[in-house]
Length: 240
Image 1 (cartoon, helix red, strand yellow):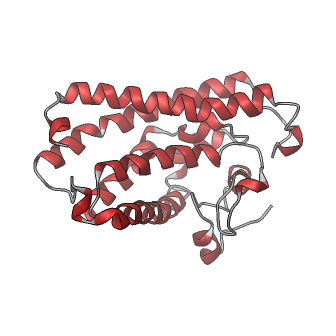
Image 2 (image 1 turned 180 degrees about the vertical axis):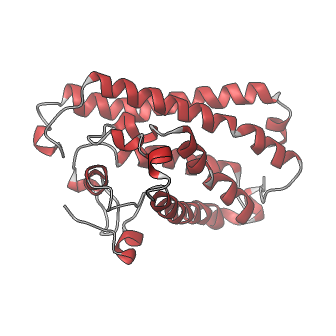
């Protein structure tokens, strides 16, 4: 971590921007190519909505997702400031807490993020906020993997908020945080696949593309990210 802090911040920002963009292109592009192009006919019975989104929608999804990535990458400035002043609970030696805690911390991050995502998601569905913050994402009623991060800039800032919460609340190792951020990208893309694969659901309360497709078609239900237990607990779960 000290080596990272010695690198000029502008270079770190550019590096993060490139890494996040490349990761998004790979994580969203491969399933899009697999499902919407190569396997369009093979998997058509698994398509959750019959229509295939047009190129105009894809361009909009990519445009706003790249804008979100730019906003996310700008968070590096605050991240570096907090690290340099030792404001966060970062640790650099895994042996300080052990490998068990290292993996447990990733699980805790996911649980914290799921709660944060559910409640902030419900917040921006309030009629006062929806049209200013979240309506843009709901333009894509028939989502594709490219739509995973197609947010209004205000929503991008709100979704980014989980990172400082994690950094200030629990002890974290930079590798664990990197794994967590990668999981965010992968899972958010997964629930926006637009196709249903039952074999990818490994436990009952797991959120799936089918569950999230319900939300894009009827925004009163299914606000969860990784799991459905908040929806089930709060009476906002709907099984299509």
